[in-house]
Image (tube, rainbow, N blue to C red; front, side):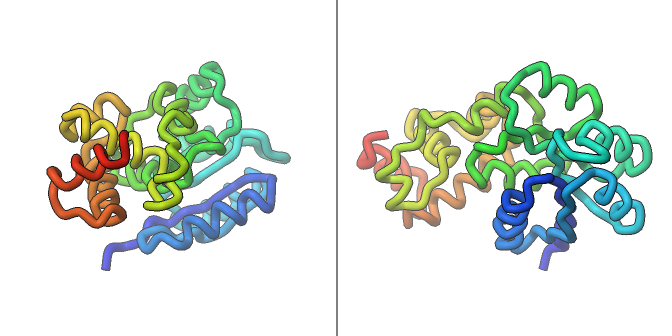
Length: 211
């Protein structure tokens, strides 16, 4: 059994934070240690406990996200920081990047995006880019009928479309600013959800879906 990625979450919207906690707790390799409503309590917690990944909002009372990032990068150099934000503004993204954040995920992104970002950041293969953050909440690949039928995420539908168009993992990774490992993980999940066992079957199913 693989060791779990230990996570601490800070967001002053309690219902939202609890929803994220519940979603992440369903993943076998993720362990949410605690949830906080301000940065000060979060920093006090991680000063005593080992945490692999911190997920933080930027707007919080007492100590905000900027303070969280600065404190962690100054003291806990092995702890990664993911900003979970409602702002799709490049200036805010760049500010977080300059402070040392390891990833930036929009709050209206598909849940899978946060899950895969946590894994990428923990493995040290995450590519942080503003374009990637914007793509995460892009609805162009929603295809609601097939999404509902096969339980495919927007990212999985996007990757399936690219596979059908002949792109290989490296090309998909470069275009979507993902690691090849993450693309491969998505492909395995797509295979499982669609009940196919080969690339040829996968392409045939994509054509049937008119992607």
